Length: 109
Image (cartoon, rainbow, N blue to C red; front, side, top):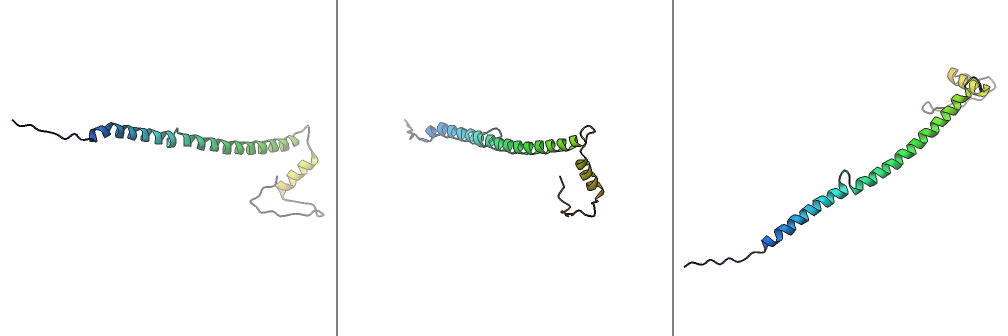
């Protein structure tokens, strides 16, 4: 009678923990670096702060423009403002005034 004796290998015991470690590392990586992960949250918060600062700047510019436009309305027309806008549009000045030339890239407020 033939008998076979097999030596038991320990590799079968490592398959389940190895698969579990791979799944945990995969999901862990994507929990941190994924589209909705922790790192994306920090980038989104930084972007929100940047856009809020930009919004505040644009709102300040808008208020300044609204204030200047309000000065040009009929009820509150200021002669200095009208004079400044006319000179700027016509590119003219009086003979006794000093004219300061600025680079063309900058706008006079």
